[in-house]
Image (cartoon, rainbow, N blue to C red; front, side):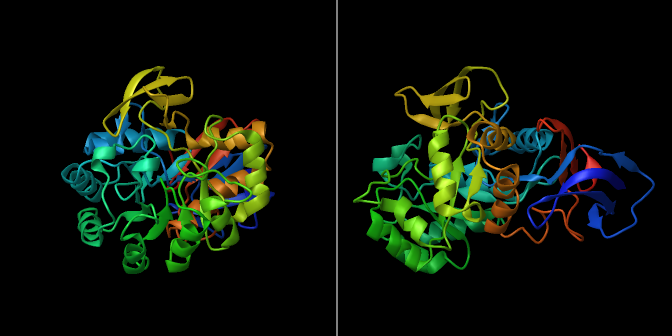
Amino acid sequence: MLIKGAKVYTAEHRFETKDVAVTGGRFTAQGGDERVVNADGLYMIPGLVDMHFHGCMGADMCDGTEEALDVITKYEASIGVTSVCPATMTIAKDELLKVMQNAGAYTYKRGAHLVGINMEGPFISAAKKGAQAAENILRCDVELFRQLQSAAKGLIKLVDIAPEEPGALDFIDQVKGEVVVSIAHTMADYEAAKTAIAHGASHVTHLYNAMPPLNHRNPGVIGAARDAENVHPELICDGVHIHPSVIRATFAMFGAKRMILISDSMRATGLEDGEYTLGGQPVTVRGNRATLHDGTIAGSATNLMDCVRFCVKTVGLPLEDAIMCATENPAREIGIYGEVGSIETGKKADFVLLDKDLNLVSVYIDGEEI
């Protein structure tokens, strides 16, 4: 296959009008079969990578069924997310084990590739639980983590912890070579977060949300993350969680190369307003705002491609930066950049064609149009 005349997003983070060849489901330096795709005037970008979301179209990762993963991967592919690393919730241990087993046994069905699991809980702080269920919160437990990782057949790419809780630093010491450790749902101050980073934590889950705010005398997790060049924070850019001014300030503070866009979407994404659940708790969805009945924000109802559009059209970020933060950066973070996340010879031909207004034209996974 030959994609002709597209404005291709290159590994150098700029657009270049050129032809791209695909053979055997991968980008090639030349050749391709007889198929030709006329992409004149279209943006060609890598397929997006969502490394933190819970569900969509009525399905949730924690449903723990093959059917739920079928729904999730099909929908995500349809909107341009070609690699998914869905997140679990703070649920009971036996339920969490079943969720991991279900994901570990899942087989590909022409939707987005299931490339990992983001273990958001249960090793968090009750004081900053957000939409997580307090009764299922546990202390960091290496044995439990490894049991879950075994059930998931190694798919867990991130594990979230509150570093100020008892046993957290020892947990980081023991698992940091096996999984990315993320600071999340935490009351940690600057020193506690800095210490966790020194031990090996290298990621921050949905920056600003479920943690103390940035204060000029108490910079907290946000300040500690800013000071550590190896730490990569996530941002939920759905127009609800973070004000556009703060998004702009955060990119200025961290730099685009460190930022990761996520959707944090829950099962209502892609559906109408109504009553849904997240982690077993009732959630009301109105527009793109999802809340528990006490008003706590409960994930988002926005997909990652819409978050990219929001960053460009409303926030004013350069398109090149927004794409990097939704493709290359998350792919690097979960260790799959050798296969996806950029349009380069040898990588999987997972890509999206967009028009000049960033409307979706077509999605390709392994060189096949979805």
